[in-house]
Length: 176
Image (cartoon, rainbow, N blue to C red; front, side):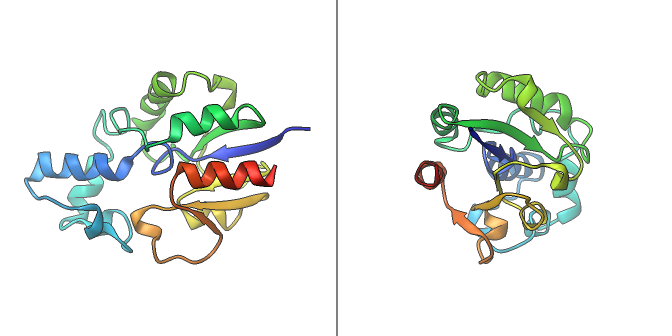
C-alpha cells in the first residue's frame, strides 16, 4: 500500500517569502532581506507589520509567487511511490483560493484536482507525512511531521527538519 504525503504550499512549494519581500519593496520602497526575517513571525519581521499583512489581501499576491527551488522535480519523483496531496490553509485570505488553484494548475499540472485540499485547519488531514513550515500544523499532525525550513522557523528545534527539496526527497525515499 502506498504511503501518503500532505504538502503545504506557502514557503514549501511556493516562495511566499521572496514574493512578500519584493511586493513590500515595490509598494513601500523599503528593502527587506530574508536574513531580516530570520527567527521572527512572518508579518512582524517587516518594518510596518500592518502594511505587510495588507499585501496578503491584494489580488495576485498568491498567484505570482515563485516556485521553491527543486519542488517541481521532487514532487514528480515522489509521485512515483507516494500519494501526494497539496494541503493549504487558504481560507483566511479569500483571494488565495482561486489564485492558489491556478498557481498549482500552472506549476504542478501532475497534481490532480482530487489531490488538492484547501482548508482552514490542517488537523483534519490524515496522511502518513505532512511537510509544512508551521508548527501550528505539524504539532497536530496524525502522521510523521516534517518541518520545512523558512525564515520564521529557523530557531525551532521540534520535528524532523528539511532545509530544501533535495533533503526532503532523500528523507522520504529512505523512509519508504
